[in-house]
Image (cartoon, rainbow, N blue to C red; front, side):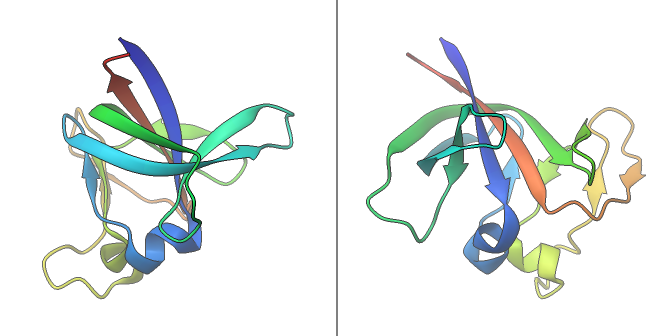
Length: 118
């Protein structure tokens, strides 16, 4: 088994991204992106085709990335509609996974760690 980190967020997720929860089985379509740090990153994409890689497995961690690059664990990543405030069933708030405390964040980027079978 291997843990793979996928960057999720920005306009792509706000446009049509679904909620992602811990322990959920996912099949994420990703593109490879070379970051400012020179390393290759996987970024979920709903619009760039062909995709470079599909990441399939169980979500073991979700983090919101605050401005300044500090990441904090959250219970789940709300849907894009919830983050935009147009989802009738979800207000888009973020929660600490262990305390249930509401987290205030202006970050639009998330890190989703997926445990894959390979």
